[in-house]
Length: 548
Image (cartoon, rainbow, N blue to C red; front, side, top):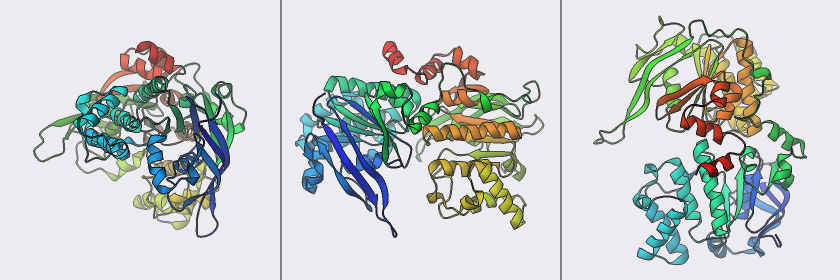
């Protein structure tokens, strides 16, 4: 390594508000060298994506660069004209965005979207563009016959590979990857990372990789910078970070990473003495099926989302449903909470005499008994209502009318989930809180009616690693204090192991394996379960290379 390919010097970004400007990025500096994978990691709101937007000159108003310089291959991009910066973004540096679904045009084929870039920046069209498009697809291991596919016809992993292929179209020396694997299943995520590493080796490209997942970066980055509140708090080689880091925040992040290997962490997460699997289950699912009709008037195809699924959940138990996207786990969550009706099968609550799938209407008592926490803390709360309104509504719906009691109960709930002082948070709107705080509110809302069962559908997947652990421990604490039963839906086997007593593995709508958490981790029987365990364990990159 000699001269840096990228040099960021004293970069600051501010957002204009009605009062005083908000400093989103504070005087940060770092360098990236040729052929390096440099990681930028931090929680939501830390400023890492703002740094990328500033580097690419795509900051949305009212954000603006208030200070500093960015040099790409010794060129000051802050001085480039609006005309020059357009070509610069593709020829010198390109970006792979977080959501492939949003990055691709839904009405254009893969061929058309690749051709558009090739024609605009290199003047290629016709057979010449086709040949180049095929080369690009080959680089990311996608068959040529997908050229005429539209985004909706592709899996999440395929869409992300195509976004990477488009970013490589003009062969820029630098690729910025902004959370490129966030929406992917753990196995697909690992495959994408392996492909990125392979491309770095083959093409000699330099990669700036942005993520909130420190565990992911520790497997393949050369160096990384850790951001918090708009500042870089630690910048070091990956091997030094792996030793534990120097800054307290780094240490906290590393200490918050669950693992699917090694000794299981206990504490709050130990099974309570009250759990008795010999008693009748509190929830019983028998031969559950859900079939969806494919969209379109003339389309007669059917999608079997859940296929003959049966399992039992006991009072005070935390059971995890684990599987990739499309495995049926979220559909099961909706079936259990009666958000949708099954095509076949039965659900029993608290004994076989209480069949809850017979009638179309859902009794109010069932809603009180079984509550749900959703994946998206941003979408599950109405932006125009205060926290008080969100928590008061179910209480009013179920008969609690006294204003003083409602307020007292809400404050107690908020403080129970770690939002102190409760009075302050009760007055807030969703936009005034972080993602982790919003998810705590959603949990408080689910707990407000003192349910027996909570169905938590990917409640941590959109949160940063340290916040994830906080949320998991809330569930564990509630189970310990209230004998709460939790159906935990996740694609993250490490989190499932950390929190649950038993794990049920789903694939293609069916249960393929079920066991206690430790037995399933230590002795997986099915090939797919073994892949999940490997993907959630340290050193997964080496095992992926050995198996390929």
